[in-house]
Length: 91
Image (cartoon, rainbow, N blue to C red; front, side):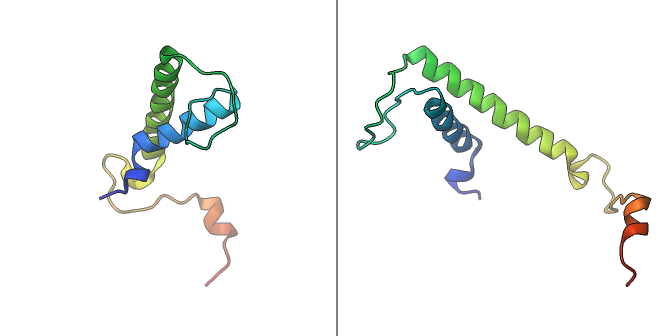
């Protein structure tokens, strides 16, 4: 089981924190946060989090498609370009 911090939602929230920092939005992350930016409205928070969530899900799906072992029909063989084989040091 994955840690809560490894969940898609947790990664999206961490991205929301970065975006709010970059856009000088004070979302009140902690009680000692005295950075003092603009206070975003509810719409900004929810739409930005939704955008972050879509971004993380898209990145995860893209990574899964690019992973040879995750592709449908994978039979356990790794595809290695001929150039890589020829460039490698002999055993």
